[in-house]
Amino acid sequence: MSSSAEQEMPVGTALLLDMDGVLAEVSGSYRAAIIETCKHYGATSITFDTVAEWKARGGCNNDWKLSLDLINTDPDGQKGLTLDEVTETFERFYQGDPDAGLVGLCELETLIPKKSTLEEICNRIGKERMAIVTGRPRKDCDKFLKLHGIDHLFSVCVCMEDGPPKPDPFPVSQACKLLGVEPSMSVLMVGDTPDDIRAAHAASCRGVGVATPENAEKADLAGKSFHDHCALCVAMKSCGADTIVSPGFESLVDMFPKK
Image (cartoon, rainbow, N blue to C red; front, side, top):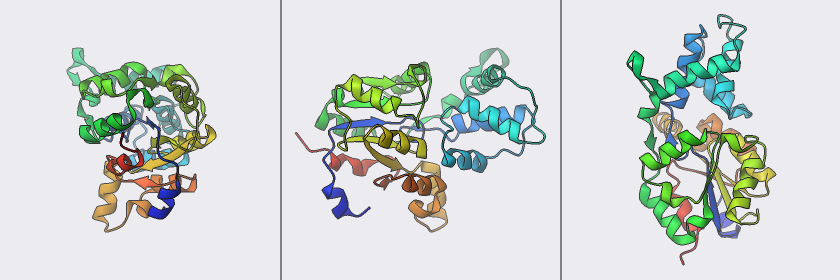
């Protein structure tokens, strides 16, 4: 998207942020928990690239269900598993198991954007116009926000338990409802997968894509732009993302006018 095209867009009045891959660096946590869960049940062919390919297709916002689906696609994967069984195993890897001396992969998560970036946007539009829209369970969402000292910047969190997941428009529409704003192109929904963009458009909001740190790094090492080298970025563009920004989304600050 050209800079002139961006200038034609309405200024931002509200910001909705996905968590995984946008706020939280999860390649070593949620993504790794998928791989470890699959491996636990014999699905050793599943790699990080496999997970990325499925995420790029869309409809994979629930990592528990995605793990089960991936296990079932592997010829060597254990068959007949229930979602509850897979979820319990996934959570053991992600949350950890103190009795077994297993440290949770969640401990590897880091904050992607600079805290100052979030604070500046909050200063411009106010916390009453900032929300988290995530497929995480609420306890995991709250834990991450508090751990990184940014929970005070968001007045609303729409999580897994609240209703249908993205790409259904519900999470985005619900966030707008709780913020008290009308869905419009001045409401920015920022995500790292096609599901985020589809949900934004279905809710009549603006969909903005962001490259994940690992994908941006891979593109850089290949001497290419993540816009064209990253499957998720290409998929988001094909879904109608207005723009794809770098990890940390610092460039979004200027989309929100100073008070």
